Length: 292
Image 1 (cartoon, rainbow, N blue to C red):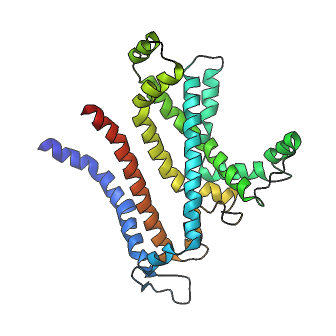
Image 2: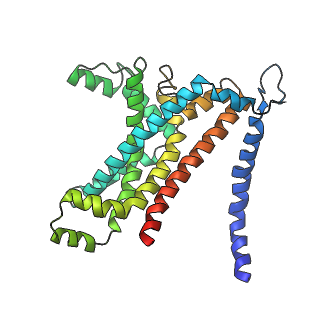
């Protein structure tokens, strides 16, 4: 009994901080989402309008377009990060000259703030100034201008996110691969299994929880991407990179539409919880099947 009291006492500071900076702001956002509120407008008072904000966003073409753009961004970015992260993890598992140096350089993007990443990529992709348009023009005769091409802007945004977060995936994959027991691989080698068969039937099932956990983390991060995109493209051209986070930012701050922005935030949070629940279920289902 005494140990339980000590445990709650030790947890109390964290619980208080979580309540003050997590639960209370969420309750307030839900409350505001049921109001029409522009604190800087002619009428700064909150006006209760029920579920009107939620009804409006269902027919909001900009919001629906941002959801589609976000889904495409998350799919291409997270999938590329998983493939590159696993390939780099396998490479770093082997010994080669300069391994420590390359591993250090590889992880440097993780220590950079998102707004810095967006600023650096903005400089690198600015026509007549950035190194990337210069090299593409010199080597391939390709004119890169993310301000005019929606496809180029979206592609560069995905590449930027891949560059920033692939090191995190690599580190998690290395941790998963290091923890694998050698016996199944030795048995597979004795049985004459090829590299693809070994990966598909042994490696992948054994690292599946780590892969799904990595997808879980990266999915949540990718869904709330704002800083990098605002610095790089500002959400343009058009709505090519106007992802959900950018859309909420522009509704709340430039347009000061706090009620409608709060409603979008609640819906996005709900969708994120549903997707994460599906991933969590998918992560537990194979383990329960194996135990059964």
